[in-house]
Image 1 (tube, helix red, strand yellow):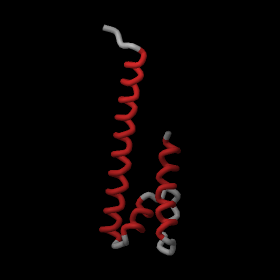
Image 2 (cartoon, rainbow, N blue to C red; image 1 turned 90 degrees about the vertical axis):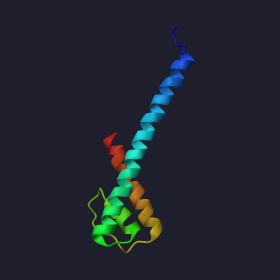
Image 3 (cartoon, rainbow, N blue to C red; image 1 turned 135 degrees about the vertical axis):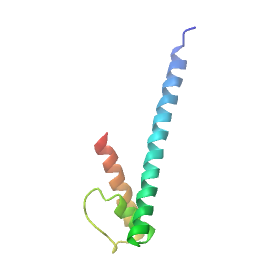
Image 4 (cartoon, rainbow, N blue to C red; image 1 turned 135 degrees about the horizontal axis):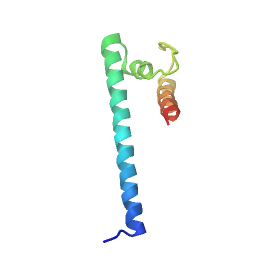
Length: 86
């Protein structure tokens, strides 16, 4: 009839995991859509599109960096945007 504390905790964890899954789905979709649109419209390589699609700092186009720095900058900008909103 009533739920035990462990059942409540498991239900709460399941709800939180569903929330995290939904947020991750939105983030992945945004990364894909933004990068695909810039690749198509801007005629850029995918890594430049990925970096430029999520340029929250307003730094403009960046084509003189190496692959590692572009990936790091992309995920740093994404992380900082999410951290700012939470």
